Image (cartoon, rainbow, N blue to C red):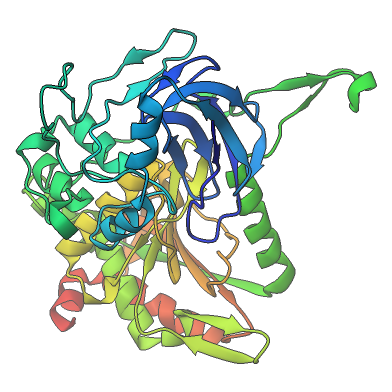
Length: 449
């Protein structure tokens, strides 16, 4: 009998919420079969079992929060498979870590299977009996000799291959010992992820509250009659902690400016339809990077204990993205070294990953396009421990005076919120003008960069 504990999910996370069980008590499972879907403050994760056998006990209910190291399921041996399953797990933690260093993506730390364990993966659709999913690697039904399998350790790599229709047996791994890594699969699936077009939301939908799972509480169970109480998910708890700390610690100040973005708009229109042509956000991101080079104090953090401003060499540009879990801020790492075209590809990549609920690194400065929600301006809360955030409103046709004449131009409002402890309004205004001036003369600004 083996009890599987919630593994260390990385990045300092200490707990996860049980979103959905993928197996029921009494089911027979294979090594590496996903058994539960959990939500952390970073991402949704399918957790695979390092044990094969029959599920004897599920130790937590859906909706419960489980600490790292607490029991998830207990699995009992099924015949001779018990010894083989136990042997397959020996030394797996080290192999898992080797694949992560080779670029396999987010793997669960502290357990896994050896590369030679050819397990068929199953998934249990909600409300139905367990049926086999399309296996990434299928073992021969009759053991007539050594079984040749693709050397894949990470369950997430297998899932990526399954979703992309990649035959793992045909790939040659570049990881340690020939292990197939995430990069190997992604090189076959696609060169650049495609972001789905934003859905047009009607005025009625905008006025409707989000459809969270509701729980009715009567007066006898801790609430008043007619109340609905929505438990905070692990993601919401983490967001609340960051935003609450930001409001409690940071003396924010906000400045804004209206920008004539007509030249930038026209530049984008001239290249629309051309393969690889950057979008508006990529140009703005390039101008933000230029502004941070001029004012590096805005790409920093404040060490309160030592009373020091820590300026950072690398610009990891956070991009605010609305996902089905809420607002997340994945980062484009090393944005200071990228061209506009490279920034465009990187922004599309991290946005797509965030919408797939994949864990992404944190940034050092945030760019927030709330104009996508058809609003003109905002005074956002700084994403602690960052010290500033730039926001863009929607681009609108507005009357504007150019060379003394009234005309219609493409106008967008920039708003900038900053930590008044690290700089004053002059620095904030100077940064804003770098970005605004570049948007009003993009060709000249790009020529100087």
